Length: 159
Image 1: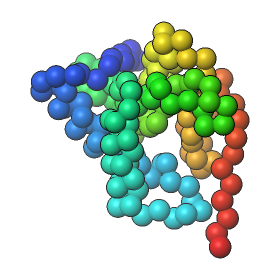
Image 2: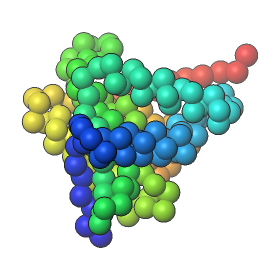
Image 3: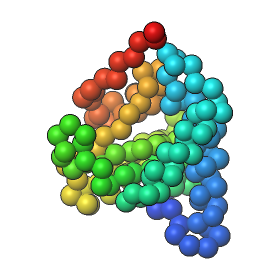
Image 4: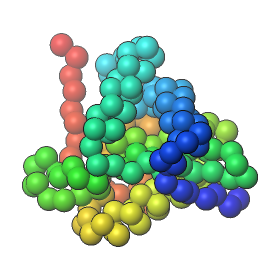
């Protein structure tokens, strides 16, 4: 399969279609970002995704769209001016990445990740970071195959 990745369109009908695609796919896949401990509802997770999109839009970022034969397959949101919160070192940060369910496992995520990493390298960013839930096995496998390692863990306890 030949997946192509481009930057999101910045003007006209393509811009609106890309924005609608990101919103739609993000809302449809947002539960993969919710861990099992906090039992998020889909409406609450959808609101959180919308808030994330607003935060991303207010910062320097790049949106990547994976496509094939005119069909949008997935997207990645890369923040390029968000330093690491502990070391303050420059990094690229993937705020959200999603692939249409029927295209998962076909290389779309790998292509999006590679495009984001290439952009981060082009900008001179020495690290790429992201978060993934423990339960998202396919996502964790993708990132591990790409060389990502656990640096920190978020621990949670119901009270």
